[in-house]
Length: 134
Image 1 (tube, rainbow, N blue to C red):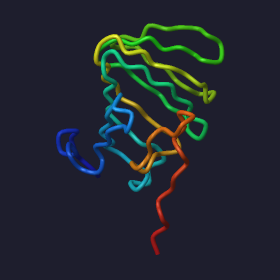
Image 2: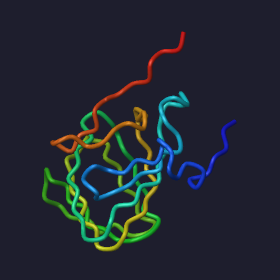
Image 3: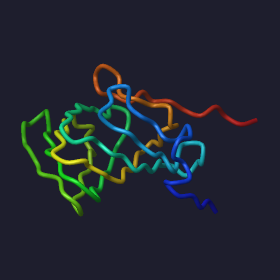
């Protein structure tokens, strides 16, 4: 059994801040836990815009605080995301988040991330894996 809090991982290598400066993520469950998913608390900052494309992952997101406009970049459809709203990127959709007020959410990724990922120039997380233990 693993028990840890988001507070426990502040300032550790599990607390990732994007090079773009638009978000930070506390990655409380990672690939090295070998449970088939990763779990994060992510904050996207008010007034920012982030384009993403999880070509290698499926992501589910639940908003717990703040407000954002989510745009499906493939269809142009826009959604308002507020506390209690979930969105699931089950088709690897390219999407853009426009943050109206600091947006705190809980995210689940499959396959799990290692904790080292950041978006590349296409908004993609690379598919990183943990080394096999011998």
